[in-house]
Amino acid sequence: MLGRGVEKSNCHATVSRVSLFQVDIGQAVFDLMGNLADAGPTVVVVVVVVVVAVVVVVVVVVVVVVVVVVVVIVVVVVVVEVAIVVEVVVIVVEVVLIVVVVVVVVVVAVGVVEVVEVVVVVVIVVEVVIVVEVVVVEVIVVVVVVVVVVVVVVVVVVVVLVVVAVVLVLVVLVVVVVVVVVVVLVAVVVVVVVVVVVVVIVEELVVALVEVVVAAAGAAIIVVEVVVAVIIEVVVIEVAVMVVVVEVVVVVLVVVVISASMLNQGRAHLIEEKNGKRAKILTEDNSELDTMFIDRRGQHRNGDTLVISSEGNGGFYEMGCSGTPIELNYSVLGWNRPGFGGSTVSRAGIG
Image 1 (cartoon, rainbow, N blue to C red):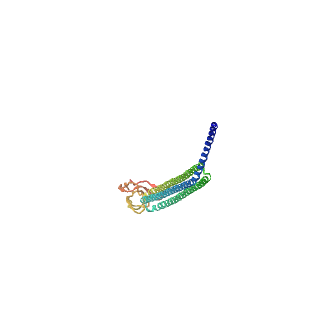
Image 2 (image 1 turned 90 degrees about the vertical axis):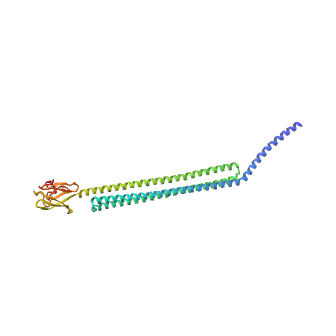
């Protein structure tokens, strides 16, 4: 009896212990499912709130980046235009000053009559240079504006596409999370889905931010390239203008030197002879040069031409047999007699 009772007791104890374990597992699973079912709406609400917050943050960041890019581009364009205008004004002032100096030099050197042709040439050159400068500057400004508009449009389009993609991804993820939570109600699945959603959102945010940064960097690089090109173009134009001005100045100086050399050599005519000894010498503008002695041998006569030059230092010259020295302010080159082909006669009777 005792042995059988013990055996039954051990058997019942074993069976009872197994049943309790099974009941505990089932109850735990049942409780977990109930807790998940109760927590389902809360999880959905939390996910929706997180998604909405992320969307708001993404939109704010994108708007800030776009505003900063636009402000930077506008500032750069304004600075470039101001620099171009200042450079053009400086070039025009330099050209005007150089023209004034050239005109003054020519007036002093050769007189008013010879200045007219030089002034006309210089004015035409200056007008052509200014017209070319204005056209080039207008083309540069138009190119800068077009480039800036294209950059802004590209940045805006990229930002809009990124925002739309992020919103669509977030909506799809929210729908997936809600369906999974309502249908499955399994804690592990919910956790995995939440982790995946977070990872995807983070990836999309990172990609969106990288694209915005790349677009902004590209816009900045384009603006810098445009600014550098404009500066180089302005420098090249200024150098070209200076080269043209230098060429004009050189030509004007050559004309001045040649004209001065030609004007400084005058001719005085022997128009009167008195007692075979004296003659009154007049220059081409009928101003009396001096009264000189004429050789008694009659080598010089009425109609002969005395070639003089104002470049000489003057000095004492003996004219005629009397040997009377006369101080002249002109260097006497010689006499020309009609009918001898304009050749210079010997300097007999001079010095």
